[in-house]
Amino acid sequence: MELDQLTECYKAMADKTRLNILALLRHEELCVCELVDILKMTQPSISQHLRKLKQAKLVKERRNSQWIFYSIDGEIYPFIKASLDSLPDMSAKIEELKASGGKVCC
Amino acid sequence: MELDQLTECYKAMADKTRLNILALLRHEELCVCELVDILKMTQPSISQHLRKLKQAKLVKERRNSQWIFYSIDGEIYPFIKASLDSLPDMSAKIEELKASGGKVCC
DNA sequence: TTAGTATATAACCATATGTTTATATAAAAT
DNA sequence: ATTTTATATAAACATATGGTTATATACTAA
Image 1 (cartoon, chains in turn purple, orange, yellow, cyan):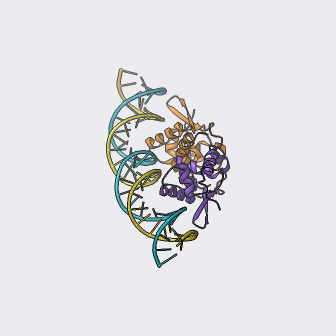
Image 2: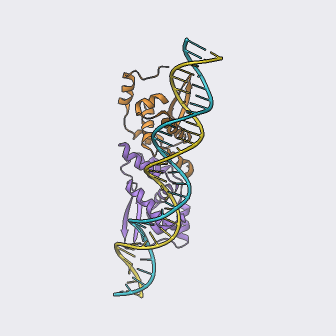
């Protein structure tokens, strides 16, 4: 692959918050406010991290009324599956979100 | 894997020069001055990039008299093979080095 | 032991990055 | 229409990062 594209990809992954986001999205698509809830960070911060991931083509978005759901993309990277598989399991965090009623239903 | 270790790994890969170094080392081990030669960058700059890669456990070093040879490590990362396989082929650069007599022989 | 070669480290500086606060946009609900 | 909710963007600031120059260390050769 092109070094510039690869550099952008690894730059996008070179942040703990963004790896957390990818680890979460690996389980299911989530909207911004759900990620804010789980990661306990401000909404603008999460939005800007998502923008970087989107620019690197690691995630894609889908609008559903007032929510925008983000999910894993990364199909342009041959190594993406192996990389994502090494991320820690975050299902507990998602269960917590659901248990606390924080899950957006749609 | 641990998120902190993964973050360090992706930070180490999040730079074009370091990806270049990894792409070169994928072919064969090289010493600092050979990398300086090929990448046309200053020696301290190359050394500092190598330090980052070493700290992230992506490369290892081997001393042979006055030279220090660097080679790919990365065995702690399950995804490393797939990642390295996506790097561009740099064999031409290494051929150039050999043709110009810049290769250290030992 | 001294000079030369290879590499590492340190100090400095300019640019990039991540977070915060404030504001803008877009859709929904009233 | 106006308010509320969800998200994005912008400006400001502190910290991180990468490059350069200067210097230190380690090994070799004379």
